[in-house]
Image 1 (cartoon, helix red, strand yellow):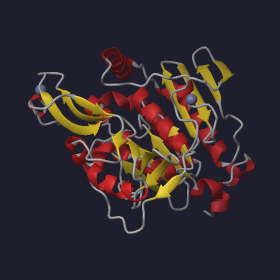
Image 2 (cartoon, helix red, strand yellow; image 1 turned 90 degrees about the vertical axis):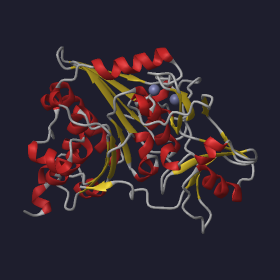
Image 3 (cartoon, rainbow, N blue to C red; image 1 turned 30 degrees about the vertical axis):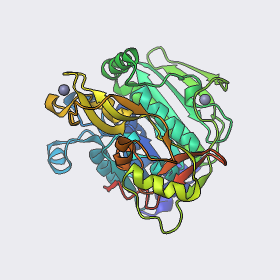
Length: 392
Ligand SMILES: [Zn+2]
Ligand SMILES: [Zn+2]
């Protein structure tokens, strides 16, 4: 069949198949919602995806997972959602040469190289921490974001512009999860566990969101700044225009990008990064995309752990290696967080030794640099931002 015949009906409906085939879509979260969105986009002819999820399939996912793996796929690809979904997307996409890439990691550790790569960012992820992170990076890079969630028959979704000054996800979700706040931690845990997810709502919401993704890809920004609410059981649907919250803690202005100076070696640790930054910015701060947890108390036995990673990594398994976590116990240390890394002077040894990969700063990714004099900007590291993802 020719591509003309294949896409004849979508063309009549107003889509441009060539545009969809070359569009770059980042989808974070590959549960019921993410899979249903990706399925619709792939069938509609979107071919280039980066798919991010660290989670594994569980048996109960089968009632709302179009890409639930069979035994052979599980054996071949492992039980993780990202690999299974990417391989199915490669099989069903109607784009001429589909290229689904995937990462079996948290979005915070996948880093923001893939955000900059994307024409549109889709947030289908559980948890306000990951959503706020993604919203923030999308805006810093000026990328539009389509975001949604559901619970039982109720759903909501929004479309955020990538433009400076527009409202953002955090305008109405100002609280960010922090591992240092017990109440937020408990709320987050509850949110992750008890959301009743059903396929009917996932499919309806995914259709709505996929259509907005394709609107954005066609240059139609009519839904920017709107939030939509629906209930599939009562068959209701509403929309509201979101205001810009003047007290929003989020980023509203994209930052300029500066490439690392030519000849920079690929940095491995924060100390290496500081050396590169100092060549053009002698003084100021680097702000990690999340607080850097240098050390923290194991939540089971109370011993101090050496963490040296972003807060979301610690919060996933806040335990020492003796209690089944990944972090080595280091009883001689004091607990501590770093929000801003000074550029000048001798850095804290735990900060200096932190691997950039554990901060989600990867090849082709970015660090926010705040000079004492001059413009806040994103420093782009050397390397290909897609090199850390796998090919389906
Ligand atoms: Zn905002
Ligand atoms: Zn422990």
